[in-house]
Amino acid sequence: MKIIHKPDDLRCEIEKLKNAKDCSSGLVPTMGALHDGHLSLIKRCVNENNISIVSIFVNPTQFGPNEDYAKYPRTLEADSVLCEKAGVDIVFAPAPEDIYDEYYFKHKETTLICPPYDTVNKLCGKSRPGHFDGVCTIVGKLFNITKCNNAYFGQKDAQQLFIIKKMVNDLYFDLKIISCPIVREKDGLALSSRNTYLTPEARQTALNISQALFKAEELFNKGIKEADTLIDTVLAYIDKPGIEAEYAEIVSLETFEKINLLNEKAIMLVAAKVSSGSATVRLIDNIEL
Ligand code: AMP
Image 1 (tube, rainbow, N blue to C red):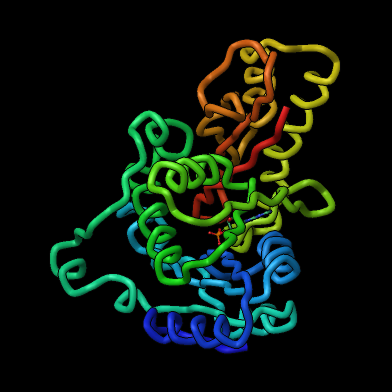
Image 2 (cartoon, helix red, strand yellow):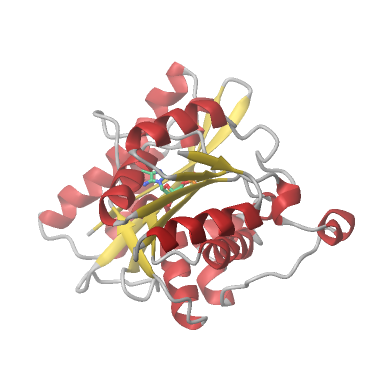
């Protein structure tokens, strides 16, 4: 396995590997601090492609000014060991200066891929203005650098997945997006790199999020189809000392637009803020209904 930092070196290495045999390439974009959720994407990528690439990059343009860009966990050495064990061919771990030019660092602006307003001005995008512009921009760059045939994304970040599929469709990126199911801890907590911020008490409180979603699923399976009833149940369940729901919403899986009655495939999404010592940790989760 090779660890590569420069986009041009990555292009050369991929060309070299592709010339050796006619083959498919897969990409797993990540911000590192890899856990079993990431590894499920990585293993699938390794199984389904001749060349597998994992990118590890904490992308500055997708973080707001008061978010956790500086303190986001960076564990390249441990991540590389996990990738090597999983059979990855290339870890692409650029520095911000490898991905953004001097103009960006001087003016704090760059060419962006901006998804339509209505797809971003809700759910996570509402409290994170500019977040999905940053995500689409880095993912678009990675697609152009790697020219991968397949790219793997987790359903954990459901709004991101929807927006990236739309970007690929709108901009004619020539690749397939493969969505992978949410990986959870045994007790239900969705794996996230941000779980490392949680104290043991906060981790216990954070369990309310997945449990609230499972409760909604239970009610849905019993025949409750009104979105408001399911949303109220989830909000009431989450609302405990040390945790506050930012949103709970139900949207159509196909259009990502709000629905009132669950007569089509839907997804319920939650974001909540958990107090953890002196910090607040924002976590997201979702479930298909
Ligand atoms: P991140 O490093 O948080 O940007 O995540 C990189 C990719 O891993 C994204 O496509 C995420 O949706 C996916 N991912 C993160 N956590 C999980 C999880 N618990 N289960 C499945 N996929 C995940």
